[in-house]
Length: 387
Image 1 (cartoon, rainbow, N blue to C red):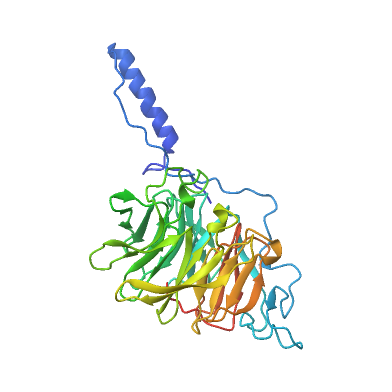
Image 2: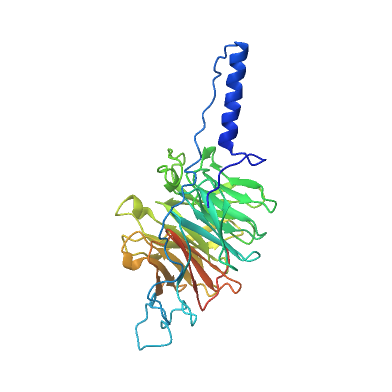
């Protein structure tokens, strides 16, 4: 999927550079002029630039091996007599199975669904690109490269893409004409750490998390020292553009989501990656969107360490669907909780899962970013489709 960079008339950039260099050298030799090298600034590349995986035996697409109806990859937390599908778990839609719909990525993350085009955009972080999966014909293509090692993506109420960038250390908006607007890259005059995930409330405010994962090395960003003392959750005012801290007591704030009525804000803390005594859970806050404030923090759901959850979404009934990975392989996949935090069931995926989103024309198809692949499964519920 990686294409050679070309000049406007199709000549490879490397060839053009060699021609220019040779012409310049010839001119100097002909005139006998001695050239002194001028001082020049050297700028490092903004992250790893495109090294897609190459395999002679890619993971097979279609239903996962061993699938039948009802699919054994769907596990209900409710035990009882056999029923038509997992009892009490709304991941079951009938004659369906968990499918692998695309593969060949290094670290798939941050999916977002665009209903108008019937496609899913998602990040391939180490390969510094945003991918596009077209739902109508299954076509996979590169949407943007480089993507500044993009991570979380969402969509605002005007249908514009909102992206959190690791190596850019910023939150951007892709305008309808394709231009890019920087929404936030500093707080109190200092650079953000590495924005991770974002949501947009009805009033247009953008809420985002800012851990340090993207500046910890060169694999999914550019290694750098953090400039923000704390790892915060921020809000960008829709009118003034002012960036404010709304929560400052996370170890590593990660995935973020809204309840359907926008009265709750869910934020994941993956601080366990920094030490065994740190949290691996989802926190929930009472949200006053109009005032731009949250209150009454509590733990919504604990993850089974050493696993962590990374991303989450809500359905129209307020159930919370979250990713699970990085620990026990038997826990890899998706978990679904009631609005009260009771576990309803699991979707088992054969890879560590980072993030997910609802899509499809009826908002009932769950797209799942699992390490090297994109998975999908029809559910019996509809996503709230709140960014």
